[in-house]
Image (tube, rainbow, N blue to C red; front, top):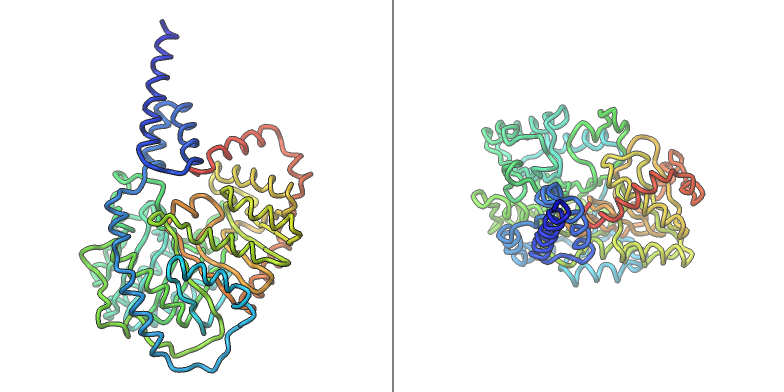
Length: 483
């Protein structure tokens, strides 16, 4: 009798699992991962699915997709045509080496090659936020901020108060934050900004953390645009943790870029589209305001780049495609930093092929976890890639959160996208793909400095791990498509 009841309950649970998983289309790896959770973790599995498995409602995706992308691109093209001739010659060696990558982004999403940019590279949060706050204080017309995490702590309040002061001075301030990534920051945290005339909204207006308890489809971008002239993109979030004030992580090692030049046009365009999809009541209108949002560039550098975004609103997974193409372009070296190493099959194969072809492939990950399952899965793939000839480094001077890739010291990528399923398919991300030897060299040199504070993990080191740790790694790997 008891066995019959258990069989009936198991059968019902399996039927419900099948209905739940196949109700919405998803890739086969994620399908099997969710089947595993729902069938073998009854009841609790469905609660986990409600939190992490539900897809973004179509009406929200449609709201995002229906933005007039072509109108913004037309506006940018008009401003580019109005630029004065520039005598500075870009790094044509790096540009030519990456020509097929540049064409890929342009063909797939119409991303133009932004030329004549200046940059500052930041790897320390205190220095980066000092410069960012100085730029915010100098804002005269517009401030646009978009972060996965905007914490209600010392740094978060410091930046919010600057925004309040600038809004009172007449600057148009718009802030997008992710309701999950910024939890427990509440909407009331931004009340002083709203009272000063500014705007702050959770991405796609997910106001309620309780009723919108969805782990996936988050806004993971980290961008700032000041007066349409200065832009920031990279891996830092806004919070004390990111300036080394959290004893759990210690020193926080990340990578961010400060940009001036035509690449800021791309950051501005992405922000406007994100904002107009998020807040239907307070749209940013750019009709007749090209000079305001896309001012003519006054200062010119010699760095070329493309700012690329990806997200669940598109099946192209453009940043992942860019990563793979970058790896394919490598002739000598391909050095990668990522806090989460959970590649899908295509990325895993691209890395293995490069290593087998004699490319010096190195991947640096943290020596400590911030998410248990994710870190065990990272260790699993680190071991597999070490066996394939990839040099795996564990960063030991705190926590490394940088998302960078440097190829042959000539081309590189810096942004918010990790080497994992979540960044490739589930989150809204933004990366700068850079075709400049100077910036690539600076990233290369910084990587060498990071190696001095890291330990090389050889295959023999992984062999010394306990059976229990190996079990946790293999089990976490089964859940990789949904981590």
